[in-house]
Image (cartoon, rainbow, N blue to C red; front, side, top):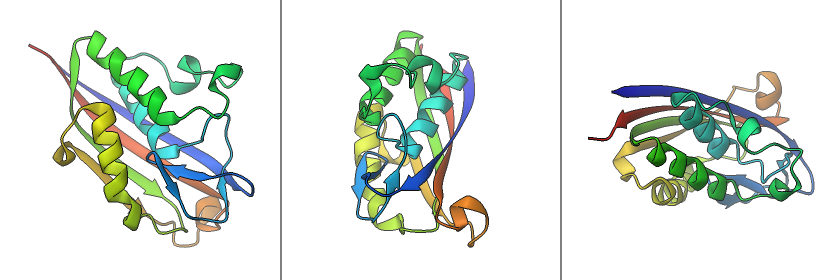
Length: 159
């Protein structure tokens, strides 16, 4: 049996925060605003995994009203969600994702993101796609006010 899930996240860019995407600290004058580290890519992947299993969403599982998630490392949250996937008897077939940012350029950071996320999810690098897109200077992302990410995951029941 197979299950498909989609995930999406967007966070506002602000001064005074580190920019962390895909578990990687990216050199930039602004970072993403959020209760945790605001890692949009990891949050989109988490929501895709939870959606595939009909387990609601990241905000339900890790609410921003809970102080223990303040400035949380999203890769640690991803590992917790992956444990739920395994507990339910599923494995990841593949993940396809997009990071949408006008600036900074994401391509130089993608290999390190893949290494971190593949390790956290116990998948081969061939099973995780991370693409970088811009908004061609359109909307909030194109005007460098925010960064967004999307993810799709395919799960397979083990055995």
